Structure formats: C-alpha cells, structure tokens
Amino acid sequence: KNKPRIGRWYEIPAYQCCNDIPTVLTDTIPGEYPLTYVSVRIFCDESTAETAYTSLTAANMDELIQLLNDNEDTRQFGTYVAVNETTVQLTIPLSVKNRLCPDGVLSFNIFED
Image (cartoon, rainbow, N blue to C red; front, side, top):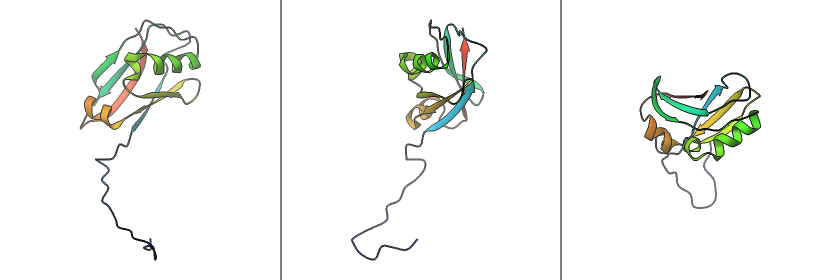
C-alpha cells in the first residue's frame, strides 16, 4: 500500500500473539431433543481441560443456545450461536483460550450427563 500523502501518521507494530483474536469452534449436538442435563467439555489436545455440568434441559436449538449463554458455568467458555439445527459454534476469547490451553489445540463438545 502507498503511504498517505497528507497528515501525520506512523506505523505501529501489531503482533497476532498479543491481539485478542478469538478461537471459533463447532460441535454437533449429541442426539435428538430434548437434551437433558446439558453439559460442555473443553479439550486441549484431545485431553479434558475443563467440564461444565448443568441440570437443565433444552427442547430445541433456540433453548439450547439460550441455556448455554445464560448458564454461568457454560458461558465462562465464551459465546454460543447456532450454525444450523444440529451444529453449535463456540467463540472463545483469547484470555480463556490461554487459561485452558495456552499452547495446544482447543476443541469442545456438548453432551448429556
């Protein structure tokens, strides 16, 4: 790119390691609704890093997403959205990723306990 011709400007260094770039993961729901005792397990390099259990039930995808985002234990991992009727996306902030799995590969799954 060309430098601007007017104004006072300067370049600043930006490093991917230091910017809060979230990690985005997806998982397929474990079966058919209703899902009872919905829980979330976070993996670091395929080993369990942390698990959040609930005693809640979801009758459909909308209820599941609301449950995951509203429950204190499951929302600690990030923000959940529905990709389609069977897939959930979890966006994990860098600070959470660094706490759970600083040097490894994260994954997650939703399960019934």
